[in-house]
Image (cartoon, rainbow, N blue to C red):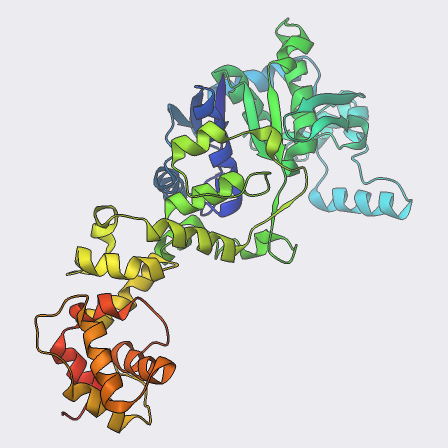
Length: 450
């Protein structure tokens, strides 16, 4: 068994394709299968090495590792051989229409209430007409002649699926410059590298029908049984992700790029735990990669589109941070942050980036909000115990302030918290107070001095 993830290096990895990468990797881990990372860089104009490097970094951050990797730009000779075989078999045919001509044809078919499917006009071209077109400087691109059948398969998520090929335009597989397009390159790679299971988005359903027809054509060219060749693949098409309102998530992908989420302080464990369970019958729980793999089951994924809810991810991220030991985050904390500081604040974080605010509270200088509490705060400052302080200091101090002022509850604690931290809510002050220290507390309680 072998699975693969095949991203195009034309942009940053976002949560939509990260979910598919994770599904393939978890399925492979659970079934002790090999996992391949293939860089689909046939789009030479938009592909960037920086994007390929970013994809590898994002996958590694998620805990996804691969047994083999290659890029399609290295396999031109293999594609040329397949192209030649399909041309010789008559399954690839040359086309000369411009994009403008094709657009006009589509519009005309729509006006005639016909499906906007390519009319195969170029199949009727005579050798003399082709020679004349080439003599006039036109260079052909090549379409694949689809079979007039319905391709069917049993999908591991969607169940029984079928694509009526007569309702699909013959796909362009080779550009005018001779370079191959994804549809053919992907089939060639999957066949030659032994891929057996393909997990991808439901937007590829039609593409799967087309590619299975190509697989059968290649089997016939090489003398194999067409059914056996196409039957070697098992497919799973996962529903697409929507936003919380049910709209297309694609419009928000820039803000949901893994690089952005990572920089904002989302933990890899939280993201993988969320993406592994989103749209399934299982609630997201903060689990290790191995534990996620052990419970990953395609049959539990809904056929309906899943909704990506940032509050749910942040809630999961909070749970991960709240149990994270100091050593796991030490290198990502502000300089000088101690284990005592981390243990004090970790239960109040949704994102690790928020830790900077609390480190400034305990180790820097803040400007507390203006309060009409000067007399109360001055009295509280006078009652501050001498150091050293520990976790009992807060209780001892506030008890003394309560007895001296007659205040209790919110009237007692709110002005003290605002003065000392600048925030309405946050970590327990019994933990923060020893970290802030007496000198800072005095400056914040009475900025002009006691």
